[in-house]
Length: 381
Image (cartoon, rainbow, N blue to C red):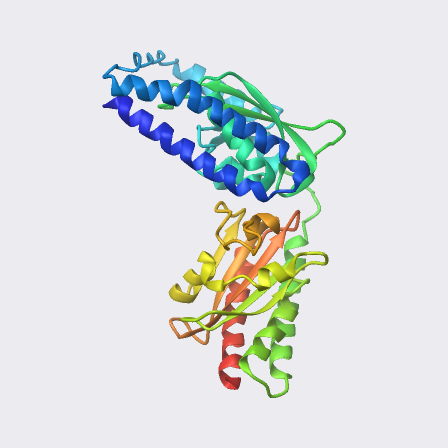
């Protein structure tokens, strides 16, 4: 039974990786090479591993003896190894076969800009560029199942222009039930990424970035109120479009506005210069899971490094919108005059590339502005 369960887990994991490879077909042509390599690895895995395993199970074979457990290490030695892991000068992460982070050392925290507490329990692929996720996921799975060490070049989603070399090796910690994968990250040739010191010494100059962001947020709230209050008489769609134009550029790279609730209608799409705005405009809002959920549930959704590439559906070419637009964070906000009130539309905001992700403070401000927008729509509707 244990072998059958393990085979079922491996097969389910393979199906998920294939789904990621399908979603990665929409990346630019010059970035398809690692995706194709990953697809070949998966085909080899089916032929060399899964099919023989299936034959052994159907024939009633045991599938091999279960691996022995390692002897427990001395407590002091474990503490020493933990200290070495945390203080290792190179960025290191310990992940499972599905790339979920189990541990992240100090150097990796500074290198990636992601706190260890936030990263633990989340897939490491979520911090990579969309084009690299399927290949990285496939290579990690190959290392975890014992196919040997691997190395590949990836790009952090917040720094897409700087290549990072990821070296993968299998590891079986005594505290882990299955083989884990140790990931060592290094800047690629010709690039250098700063690893900031997370513990500034005494007398350091205070960081005023948070104060500046707060002031900019208050300016945005003021601009929104001014735009809605000074607008000439019109219909609800006009109020929604005015709100979208206030948010576009200064707050979000993409602003997508859908009116209605039971029957959503896309009214406004604003994107960065050169973007395929028409493909998103022609998209059916009912095919966007995030929009539908916001319209039905009436709650704001904040996602940083969205894990589901089809969370906002696909465009007219069949490509996932989040992948095509290189979305690194999003806000999907229902427009209701008060909490629990009738939803009059949905406003979706994207930030892309290396732009700072939406914060909880920004999400709260947008939630407040959404009520003002809904009031303006209801007054004109």
